Length: 603
Image (cartoon, rainbow, N blue to C red; front, side):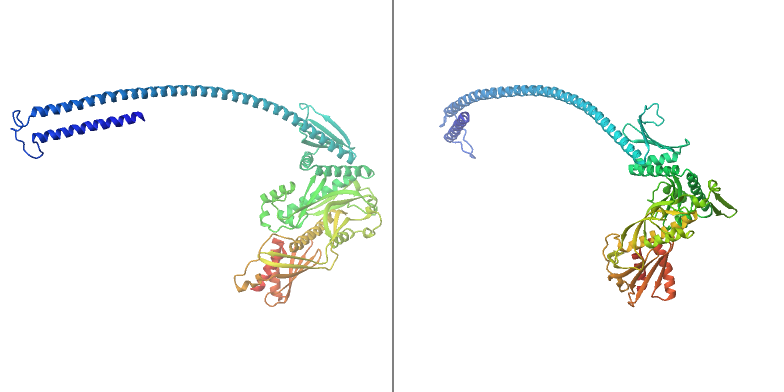
């Protein structure tokens, strides 16, 4: 602040001097008679003239000297202060450069220290992580080994329990991997009876590597081994079920040593398979699937018969490639690409509580060119009336009382002594269990293709009790097809009846766009009555005449469908019945057929 004030004072002094010089020059010019714009008389400027120019020049020079002195002092003072300020500024710059250099040096040192510190920290972290990984691996190996050993012990214990329940002898052995016939096998578990030997091979993790079934004659069935192995992998209960069935069958064979029951069973299975193969030669595959037994194959449990409802679209199975594809799907018991659900029955034998029953001695198959005769050589010399055994189809089926009565009538057709029931359960031809009885009435509201339906079940003219069938005994292979036809009829009836009272998905009623579709805006009231398993009747109102129309659905043995229409002219009824029958066979939904009928009636 002081230097700034001094600088201002010096500027004022200089300005004063300059002003004084300017005033002096002006006064001198006036004295000399010099005026701006006027020519000067040179005589006045002469040294001897009235104006003494030398004196004026002297005064000007003296004034200039004073100005010069002032400027010299000012310049000296200014240079001195500038040098001092410049020196201070230069010193400040030097100090700043030195400070910046020191800061940069310190920063570099800090960076180097940080790099060394980070490297040390990273090395420490990496070492700690590696150590932790090694520790975790060791812990994981120990834990996995402990868990594997635990699973292995659990599997061994479960298989041992299965053997105890089935009355089999149990043996467990730890294997050397290099000496085992099964790769990766670590443990072998054996379950044995007089005629059967099951070998289950487990790896170190307790998982099943292979299952082997050996018969009393030393023969093995690789396809059965694969089936048993897959069953234990899919679910232990399935494996237990197969083991139980095999051992129970083996016990039955051992118990009836007076008669070669095993031979009888093998002959019956061979007869059915031969019949199945013979039919395949004379019918297209899809027609066989629709009308005959279905697919049959041998499994580790015995002969399995796959049956199902008639196909709705036959053209896709006409060529050989698709037929083989369907074979493979059935063999794998997969129905993902098949329109209908696949059911199965297992062929077996059991003791007969009635000695009067007989087994078929022979079966004749008629072909185009010759006659094939199937015989059981083991019973040629036996008294068939004393054979204490019978063939049985095992299954888990839900039938109505009428269908059960149809089965009883079929099985007692040859020998009426079957109808003489007594207290001995072994004498009953069909083992059954009463499951439930349908209510005499039920109601259901649903929306089908945008149309609101209200279904009312008015009851049935026959017994509607639901019965669970566990086994169906029979005498001859010729009875198998009628049995399947009765089952197919019941399945088709159940599916069509359920279509009226089961929820198919949430829909909203649609608004009609023209007068011809007014029936779609109204709730359709349909009364359902049945005569299970053969008839389902749907009664509704004509949308124009308001007269009653009866849609009668007849399910024939085998599951084939025929529709009859009551309340229309005979010609129209026959034409529409044919079209609606084809539609119902395809969609298997009575509500969709009702919509189609209402559309026809409103046109």
